[in-house]
Amino acid sequence: MADKTEAPLAGVRIIELAGIGPGPFAGMMLADLGAEVICVDRPGGNPWAASGHGVMFRSRRSIAVDLKSSGGAEIVRRLCASADGVIETFRPGVAERLGVGPADCTAVNPALVYGRMTGWGQDGPLASMPGHDINYIALTGALHAIGRRDEAPVPPLNLVGDFGGGGMLLTVGMLAGIMSARSTGVGRVVDAAMIDGASALMAMFHGLRGEGTFSENRGTHLLDTGAFFYDVYRTRDEKWVSIGAIEDQFWKDLCDALDLPDDLRHNQFDTTRWDEFRDVLGRRIATFDRAELDDLLLGRNTCYAPVLTLAEAAAHPHHVARGTFIEVDGVVQAAPAPRFDGAPATKPGPPRKPGADTRQILSDAGYEAAEIEQLITSGTAAE
Image (cartoon, rainbow, N blue to C red; front, side):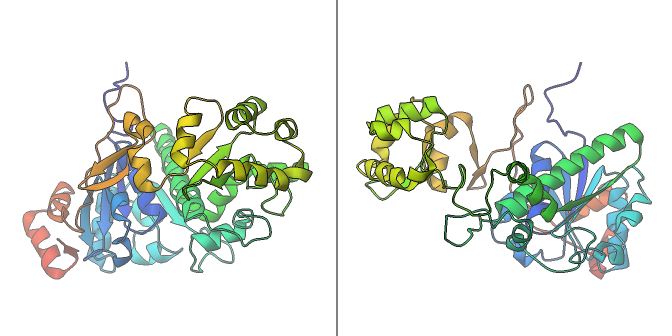
């Protein structure tokens, strides 16, 4: 019988060639699920990973290696010999030039899963070009679809490209690759491109467009602020609340709770009047403070929630009850997700200083004490 007291990925080892954005996010997801993730940092660390990325580097051991040296590449290859997977976030061709590409690493471990995270993908006319989340989601059509009618597209932070379409896609790819490798003994190369992931996240909207029910005019649809009953509204105390009362039973309950006119109750899907009804609903909500609406709608089937700041979210009773947020080394952050029956939640540790575990990781990889000293003295490795 399977042991459910261990984390789901206990026994899995991942070598993460440290980058920024989606790569660290995938490493965090895998570490949160119980994998041992060894982060290969550059000596001194990546300055771009210093701000905001710390949380995503939780629960790793860190070794600092100069990958531009032949000895540094050899260290990575030796680590790969006992690993299940590698995460790499360089532009196409860079890992190969450094001697840590898929062919280099699978030569020492044929069952290795090599995960490659890029924006444009490993091939295509733009493969070698720089870019960021906003560019990737722009090219896929996702950015064009987000925003209000007759206004500019609104970048949704870097959730769609970097994290949902990038890091999460790579995580799924790594897990699928590891499952395949364990059944076949042969590893896989995972080409996780943010343009592919962002496109996958838009699957439903491609389907709607194919049916002829999705216009290219943003801010006119059911889920993009076009519908007055699926939108955000300002309260009397200058805060915000969200309304998502799409289904009839939820809409009617909201109408009852807010004492809305029968005209709204019976003509919810009359798109010609959505702007008119938005004004009526907005004026009604503006007669309440947000806390009053919280109390009024508590326990009612209205699909309502206050729009909380990050600080407010961490203190909300529902999140407190579930332990949705945790504090690690004085920093409030999301707890590991998803959750599994039987296994206790992993307890993330704070990010380690780049190179904090260099000596121990080298020793675990079979380097002798004199070799370790020589690697550090020469600058091939650092602590």
